[in-house]
Length: 184
Image 1 (cartoon, rainbow, N blue to C red):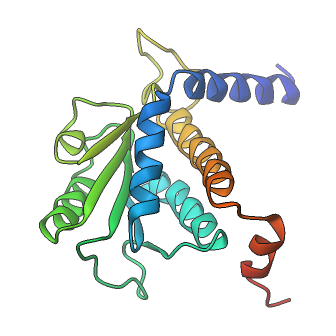
Image 2 (image 1 turned 60 degrees about the vertical axis):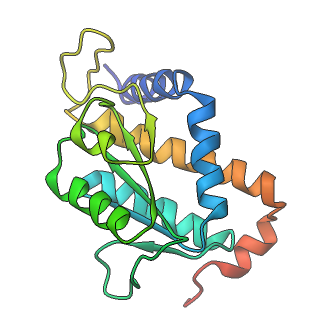
């Protein structure tokens, strides 16, 4: 295969996952985000990297957002929301973060490919991305390395949610540009 064919394969797989995502699950998550005083994102590995990009965009549209584990992240309290991601839903660190946020009175949401997993069972809300986390999955095979399609779908879905929040809030590109880091 040529480079553009691999690119098409990746794009088609991501589009397929997003097309199967439940709109109401996304709307509910956005309602939680908008109602929160502060938005925290958490997870492990590449899932956390995808949510870190989401936190940055939330800041760009004027929301207070933090990445769990960063040294400048404040305590999570009632009125806040945690958005976590775990493809397998088995990641112990992600589950511990969700449980800790809940114990401190914050609302919790999890983005996962496995709605039967432990982390999904402890969250207030679940967004199910129908993405395989292994090469072999009888419902939706992928030709990408394990977990990759889930992580790509998290990033793309989060970017779509930013567009939705911009629409809801009337956020302009100019406003976002003013909040963008400028050290150059």
